[in-house]
Length: 119
Image (cartoon, rainbow, N blue to C red; front, side, top):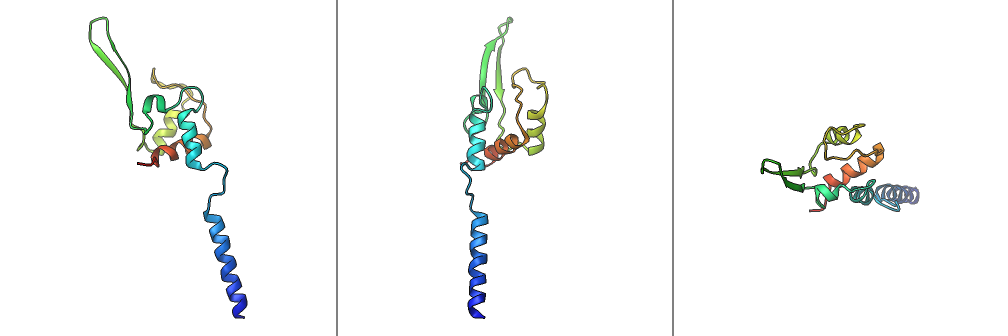
C-alpha cells in the first residue's frame, strides 16, 4: 500500500512538473519579441524603441518656421483593451501609425512581450 502511495505521489509530481515547463520551440516571450521587432514590414521597435518606452520619430520645421516633433508613445504599460483596439483598427486614424493586419494570437504575444520586458 505504501509503495502504491509513493508511486502515485511520484507520478503526480512528474505530471505537474511537465505541465509547468514550457517545452515549445519558441516561448511566448520570444515570439512576441520577434513580432515586436518585425511584425510585417516596419517593426514596432523602430518607433517605440527597443524597450517600448517611446521615442522621437521625426522633427521638422513648418512653412512658418515652427519646429514640430512627432513622438511615438510609451507602450510598455498600455492596457490590453487599448492595445487591441488600436492595432485591430481596419484603418488607423493616426497619420503616422501604420495599419497592421495581425492575428489575435500575434497581438496577444506582442502585448505579453512589451508588458513583460526584462528591465
